[in-house]
Image 1 (cartoon, one colour):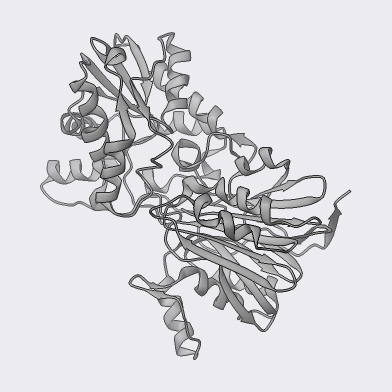
Image 2 (tube, helix red, strand yellow):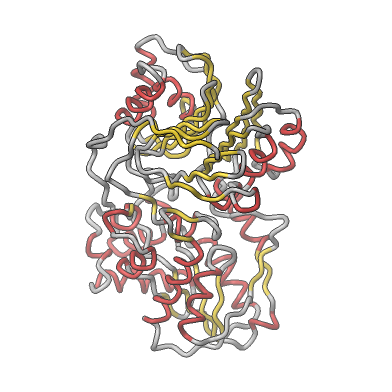
Length: 483
């Protein structure tokens, strides 16, 4: 998934925007972009696949002058997109995944609308959103029409002379949070962007909600929906520990996940509790607190040089990062029975080849793997969290056990069934670990603390919310000033 950030400030926005966008670097590895509006638009986009956002944009942001701006860390498309529209010029950044992107692009092409940003994967999704919004009677109407047209999810920030329009996708898969400082407003995918910049959380946008922020304050332009399907994986893996969504902190959820894993793990004797850094760390801390066993670090991540091995698009790049970033500490590992808490098992290749293997080679006597969520069964349709069925570890197990791909995997999702146990045995042998026990769906939902119907659990159970518009949504012009 991608991360987006916007700042409107009476004193100039560039510095806060630069650092606020950089605090989203864990959400993407392909492109970074900034756009600032002063007397005119200033826009920069760089490929960040081989370098950090800070190093690419450090000199750029110092030349950007204006009171409002938007930024993005993108997992796929080049952003921000600039459009000289019938509403006046604007820049736009987006986060999400458009399942019917090609169909929508074909429809616009037939109307004579062209696209300038085209890649091997088709049109640029952010440019497509800009062109869809331009079909409306005004910006708000255009955003509403865009919401109705897309299958998937799209949250966005649109930089216009009026200010920054912020719109959360209509089912709330991706979050947007509003922050306020003494003389500025900010909006971000990740609230961890706020504390060090002096912003305090004042509002979590509801699904489908649209607001406008500028130097003078905030205006509600469209009320949100009752339907909420925020991505559960944000708390389990994707989100940053210091971030909070719907008022629920990521670190606390992960600690609760680890505690539930320990509560169901009374039948093994262990010496050490560990987590695969970084996202497995809090799960392991929760496990250690609940079990009374010591938390230690048999594997440490060389953070200065390597980011997430999950987000890069190519397997070769993911494998290289996974190989290099985790360094084993033999003095902590040797002779110990180790619980390894992991956020999830997606492909299983990195866990097997670059975590488990290092622990065995350093002298571990037992390795017990405890993922903080159930087996992943379906590729994500909304946030690019998982990419294809073929690469999912659970699906590989089912394919081998059945001798073919099967459509109905409900028995394999039932943790009380024999089929489920066969799948777990297969994955345990494939990973070459002593034992493997996944989190239950019920415990994962309890750890988050929202009702299951308020969470997207598609990648585990294949269940989508009902399609349709936000019932009862309406416009409201309520102004909150900066005082």
